[in-house]
Image (cartoon, rainbow, N blue to C red; front, side, top):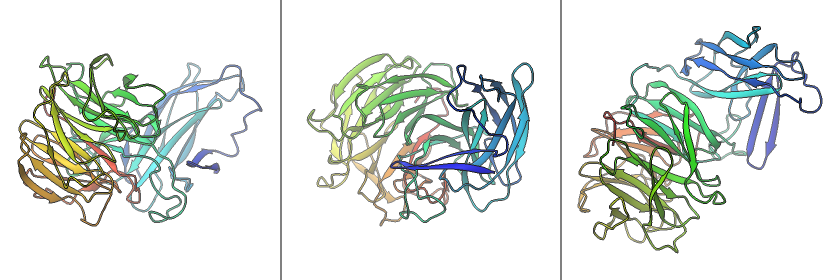
Length: 436
């Protein structure tokens, strides 16, 4: 196997193809190829056989008669973790399987599928814990860059870029079926709720900073349902997302907050991306963005980086509910992340803060406080509320943990991505009922 590795200012990009068969002619074909892939399972230990099928429409270059498949690492450390080539049937379909080669530890791999000068990439997670059970946690890579290349320790070498990889897990860390790349690079935010009233929740993804502020809605299987710009397409600060049934109609609304560099503009959309409300949660001159959460009939906000930890509550139309409260020392300027449920608000410091999670009443009375990770960690912590637990995501790693509402640990947690990823992890809870 050979691979072409391109190193740019934003990271490392790897394109891996069988060297003996891949020989594209100069210039693009007049009719480029098209390739699709379905792979089962979405993760597994070394030795797992991945069943593959899809379609391949050939282009003018005549290479559309064969599909090439290769497993390689995201960071350009091109290990051969499995490959194969499969013929395309006269009707344009193909199928086959490859086996995951032995490897050490937990690995996030890319499954590259190519034909007719066109390719597609889907993720595969090397883990010995998989399940077909309904997931309770959904994750996304917090931002980009996401780690150090070539097996180097965190903070060493040129960081590499990762796509927004959406995964689902049970509370004890078993990988469920959901594992797909969302639109856009660089990770971002994630929320889960039933935005169409079907009874099945959807996954809502907001792009990270340095990306257009696109909100995308996916099924739990990873099928794109719709996407829309939550703010001016020229704004590249990303968008924070939350989901809650604000009007009691059985369909959850999508709540957005502008990312860093934008004003604290909160907007409310229905599941089709139609705007229903817009307001500023803080002074319009503040440009650190705004974090958002929601529960039935109410929106909760926290300033983004550069703002104090001032938590506020609003009616869906933007009418303030009380004066809010400071979740941490008012002098802390890293902002505050928020989650909310029936009778509580959970907070986590933004970047620069330790991983101290606090639980408040809706009126701002402190109920409990605990450190989700080593107090010396200063990347902050993302938070989500499950039915009976608090879910946390480390700000500088990909470690996910669950706690009781009083701060008791419910297990050692798990790494949602490779342990050396240093971009943090965004977490969301899968509701047991149709709406939040």
